[in-house]
Length: 434
Ligand code: PMP
Image 1 (spheres, rainbow, N blue to C red):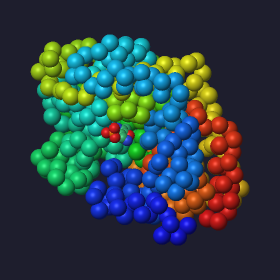
Image 2: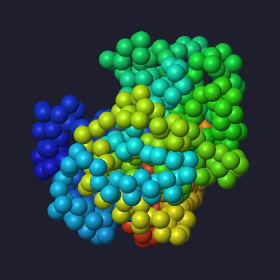
Image 3: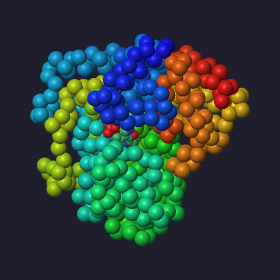
Image 4: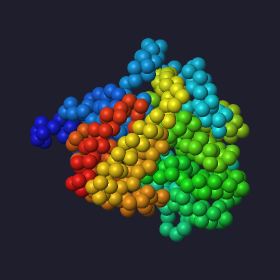
């Protein structure tokens, strides 16, 4: 296809004239891998079709929500029925109650939940709640974890160990960033040092239990256990950001997996998004009753939203949760994702390409590194040129992975073994050229 006939290129040019970078969320612009983003016309099951009508096997699934694949007929029917009843009321509905009950049944660390419209909003609100509950200002986050774009969370590590953060975005006042302490993921010694230094000032630790924003890095069990102990000892709250992992790595989220290894383990506050709305704008945060009762209108921590608990989003989320609650759903998904990961790994090793993989449920990560990384710094040792070459060769053949080496991938229930075999077969050829 020449640039003159490639409709993605033409649309990208138009988009750039009216939308910054041509996209409404930066990673969509392909800045990390170069080239032209694919503009999606429509999607069904495991596939989408771009502006040129090229078919892609979709290993992003809207960055997580589409765990059932696109356009699952039962979800579509539920959404259509909801649309006919009205788009939004700004008054409570039964579906919100049922959804909150469902979430509580599946993730028992939450007695109560509050619904919002994006993961960013949920993370920002959880942070305010933790600060309001503890009466403290400082928060700890980890390098390589993303929790949405609230000011206090757009912070990177400052100089020196366990010092206060520096904003990672223009427009975030230094005054806001100064209360955010950024530590290395999986670094127990640094965590202990931070708590020894300022434990009584820390409102919360916020983390991704499996970090999908540095591709796929698990928190070690030792790290997880120590975070739980230190937060409890010092009266700080532990916030699990399960926006990506919730209902995806296991029905009970990543916290259910850690609870199998650390008896009695539970975070204090959980932040949810993505799968919970099945592709509609829906997110939530929840915690024990005594924490959640600090929220407005019961308590002094303010939080609100015109479209929160939207009736169409709740219909979509409820049907999605119902379908993924089927016994064996996540075990099957885990096998399927494993098939893809093990297939890619064995083709890479046959071609002599250093490659490592990890996965859980429908979430995966692969690295052009001989060993799995455990920190952001290790993830970023990946050779970007090799990743980009692999990425574009796969894309040309219709296999759509996340367009950046630090992003996770997603498999849905709609992917068949044949889809996955085709992707592995394409990768076999590509690995030989790297
Ligand atoms: N937390 C995590 C772990 C995420 O992966 C994301 C988005 N990728 C967010 C929060 C922010 O969610 P949203 O994009 O819906 O604001």
